[in-house]
Image (cartoon, rainbow, N blue to C red; front, top):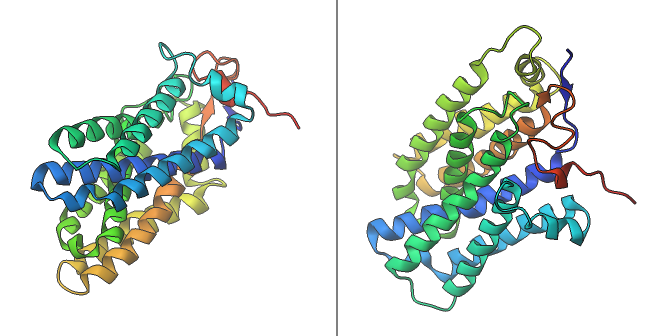
Length: 287
């Protein structure tokens, strides 16, 4: 039976996932650094406000994708079984916690709460995709790790942009994140399915088909060149090389989400009937 390519999730969902990962990754990294060092600069008002703005922008994009306010309400109505509902809740709770954080002094309790909520927020898109059992490309634990480490890396870039004087402290963690992402992406792309399987069709689209023009830049611009720039930054021109590598990493991070969504093939019927994936995003908008 021929596999079908999903067309319901596209650029706007990729933008939402990108902003979600960037904003939540920023709070993960800043909270973790605060817990490790005790320096309040990592939970400064500037960092909290930046995370708040990025996450709010992601929610706005998601709301526009759902189409109508009634669908946004539906997105919160099924917490027991829907990862979309849980994701909206995680986002909302993190935004509320960040709003509170703007008016209080950073503390151990605040950092722990933000760390937990931001990890949940960063991981929900991957659990949402992983739940689509008929889409073999997504149905692997690797996708959870990929979304998390891309979020951590993007969050690290934002911290470096906001507080350039600490970029030297971020270089080694950033190199580690890129190396982990590269290993997981290599494993992710090397999986093999049965002959004629949806997984093989997805790989063909990624590596040989229309999406290869995004797959290659995602790897080259998002991983290889930033790794080289961050490595050089350990010795010279730390801030400029960090910023240049960070911008390219953002490009790769967006392309990663885009190609993961656009290359998804599935067996007919079940996904389009909403058995495995939240129905609200698959409903076509009118007008």
